[in-house]
Length: 416
View 1 (cartoon, rainbow, N blue to C red):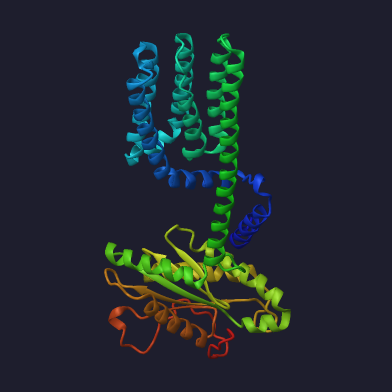
View 2 (cartoon, rainbow, N blue to C red):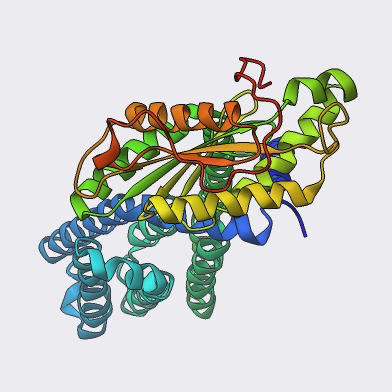
């Protein structure tokens, strides 16, 4: 089973590897493809709305001009195809794009609606050829542009729809034997439009994929610690402040646990920094296992210090979570030869935001740091908590899970 920190590192490496591919070869693995499609669908709402609104205005203008000039709509079949099928479907698309809860269903139906509209315009062109009237090639070209360049749909969806529309027109034109030279000219015009729009759609999607990858990678690098894969300090502060506000509003407690490895400098000096980095990754995995809820946060606070923010978690529950993490780190038996027991241990300091009270994150971290200091000076490898509000004036912090004390020592900046 891949550890959380290793998984985060693999995700970063995967994004970097994909960005090295040529522009025309931006294919994603399934899990990234699903996320890209979802993000693309969310971004395409305004694009779809504008596309259908523009298509509706163009169609209405075109039909109005036709009524005053060529009068193709005088034929009932052409009127049904253009006014009775294309018009209502375009109107439904335009209306649906303005209603939020319709948009997701609309995106599923959009390719079929565009195909029906395209085939209807091609059939109207065939009917116009029978009547000796100019076919509405302008509408075909506009529809191809609409399908592939303006709809916001992926290329693998738009290309078959556009190709089917052009094929329907080619079959209808091929059935008319009036003028082969005109047939070649008209079909060449439509096929050139199809090829141009297809190329533009494909390249546009590839550029969009690369931009999405770059944004995702930059966001990961900006908000995650490179070594452990956890949130960095900046990312945690942004999220924790929102969490504390929500907790005060919802009248539920939030606990902060500051964690620091014991005698980490000795491990680095004796075994080297590579061993130290591996130890930090293992510790990060154990801490992340303790904050599996989506509302919980874990971050590398700095050096060998970590911070956990637990939503809807009171003082007693925070101690239980901290003790579970402490025992898990002990069970890892990470070598630290120059200390009693020969393994790496960790000390924890807990602080809790009272229910219904908004406390600044710095205040909670300061209280947790004071509790951690007491854990360090009381022998390390233990969890200490801030005093409850009614005992705030007392001069002691409780250490409910104290282990047999080693020699008391002050906590140094190096983690000793």
